[in-house]
Image 1 (cartoon, chains in turn brown, red):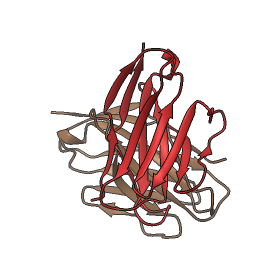
Image 2 (cartoon, chains in turn orange, green; image 1 turned 90 degrees about the vertical axis):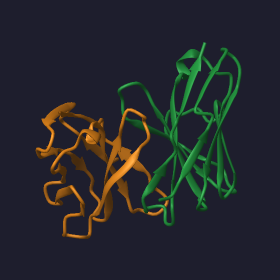
Image 3 (cartoon, chains in turn blue, brown; image 1 turned 45 degrees about the vertical axis):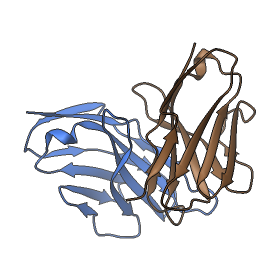
Length: 116
Length: 116
């Protein structure tokens, strides 16, 4: 079974600064998908970024980028120019590409607070 | 972006009663939907995979007779919590992929269930 580990329960950063959230995972598979989801106080889950394991290039979405290290099974999220609206819980998630077993496994989350 | 709705957003019921939660994909069809449970300050735990036209697949430890899932159409899945007890109080979230199951999951806004 796959596991996803987020070792930072919470962190905070000043507005406009850069913050990195860590995530590691364990799998024996070669093809899979990784995600970062954001859950603000409204509790609506919002996709931040998606990475396909077979792609070596790190995914980027505006101020959000990942550092995907497949060999190390690491998938960290970098938020640049942080904004107050970035305050939320951030969940790292893994999905296998094995047919019939595609489902999201979430990490325990990191609570990010942006300080004005 | 794709929209997934849930109804009701919150419900309070007496112990022993049954509660139905609806999950709808509003602008796309979903042959598969997922149901999660989230306890306060915890991560999302997958309960079951809802398959249109066939039986749901439940995760280990989830009682299928207690959490009844019906995927009646390509846009609607329902979760019925039968004979609810206070320990069933939780935040229930559904999700659906737009396109292939490994595509991005779009999440509903969640339903807060409180059992008195």
